[in-house]
Length: 593
Image (tube, rainbow, N blue to C red; front, side):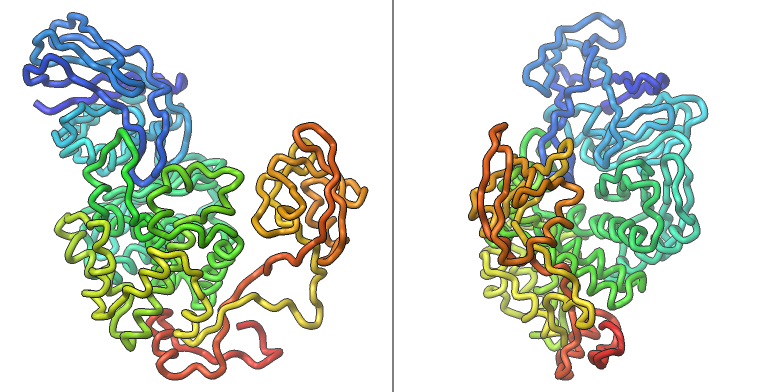
């Protein structure tokens, strides 16, 4: 008999569902049930057990009560008294619509199993069943195997598969598209939305087809795009045969916002290869009770991020100029982070659990997002491979080899194997690149790598005929706090840091003139670079004054521009990378590049 979960969500307005787990004991004297501390794809520990109440256990089928001990914060131990089968009952409160969610409202039930279905310790590999009791007119969308429709009952081959197969029940709008003949459902969950359904169908189809072409094949029999419409966006979470995106219901227009939605969906779809199947050994099977450390998250997330926009280019959803514009925006994020070269990408990956997901006031000076730097390191590695191989190989070649040798056969990647795989796939020695930029902390020279594709990279020059006023720069990040400008971060090697400004300070005046959060940027135009200023501020409730000299702000925008003297080899790299002909720079006065 399988382990059987039952969900009673028939009183959705309470936001609390009732659950039971029926467990064959195999004669064991005790059975432990454990609530996971994290969800695969979201690398931080969370107190999911806080909503659990009404815990009890009994024998099956006579219902005699059994002793239950809370052995740890997220672990219950049931004493079986020799019963062949036991039943564990509890309730869970769920009212948060995020990507890794248990959300029960009068509109729907969204369930990521890790948040509400504890696993039986030592038996994660066993098949499980899930039975749903829902309001009468609700329908269910999930990629789990359906066993029977009434009540809706599903099967997973293991607890890992259960956690990797979210479900939404309620009144979703569901349409099906068939890229390369494979059914892909688009489930729009939630009220409102400024979307054009046919456009979403077309564009998600193009993303799926472009991804399949890039890899060469698909492991899918079916797939679901869960698109949750909400008032606040939360991003996306990948699964083996689906993804869950929580987006603002107004994200589908204007065009720039809609393109961000497409980039999110492209990222999560590429994950069905990279991380769900091409993965480090530690990322499946999972240890749900503790951190699962790997030095490869930069590849799993940063490289996926790189390919997500490259796929949009391949699908012709981004023009060449739009693709390069997005890369330049990513580069601006990197270059605006003082701590970008403090740690290697491998170390940034390992400490994600206590760094990226637990940022604080010193984070920008001691770290950087492995998404951002991993994305740009992947771009540089791609251009390095295309350049040195004469376009015979690329980062796409590496991903296809990873798919063939690791993803398709379900073989986990050892921590030190990635470089060797890349070298076998491309026929190139890549030790210098990995030593400098992946294991080391050398600054990514984006301009040098861009030149391999006939481009230069640097700050975008302001219009020569109407240059904007250059405001003074202090080097702080801030927020508005009841009319005060409260400093949240002080960036390294900036006028504010040299003056001794600290996070938490509330700046109330510059040179005696009152300032506030919403008007601060405009006010700094009156103190151009090189101006001596006195800041009046409250520090922990006490008034202080500090003096400094304003600096020059970092570039507002960066750009890639064609090199006027790009040779044919560089133009070939550009064509193989961008999928379009290289074009020379436009003459002055003929418009932007």
